[in-house]
Amino acid sequence: MTEPGTRRPRRAQGALETRVLAALNEAGAPVTAGWVQEHLAADLAYTTVMTVLARLLAKNAVTRRREGRSFVWLPAADEAGLAALKMRKVLDGEQDRRAVLASFITALPEGDERVLRELLDQAADDD
Image 1 (tube, helix red, strand yellow):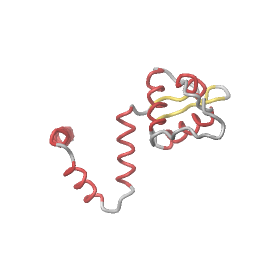
Image 2 (image 1 turned 30 degrees about the vertical axis):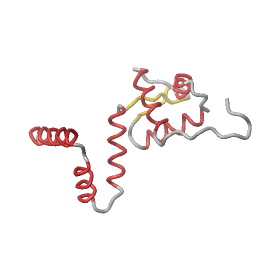
Image 3 (image 1 turned 135 degrees about the horizontal axis):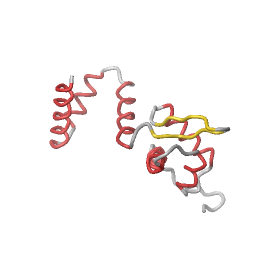
């Protein structure tokens, strides 16, 4: 518990989203925001969990459906999918996509560059 008048250190951007998404993946079935709050056991307010779920919904990383008077939540993406959505959002916000992609590729370590080439080749073969 934090002393009155002191602030808790802020979480890294996206860390809470990742933890919520991991909890939804672990659940293996649709769950309520209350379940997520209890499962995380991180002294989080219900409103904080709802805010995170709403952000994930806006990113298409989760889905929800009404059950009774509340919603149940399901993951639409795993952690890798969430990271890919974040990367896509950054790319979509840039004017010169080619320059951003070129810069990204040239900054990759050799092993990652090789994996990317393999994935691109595989995607081309699937077309």
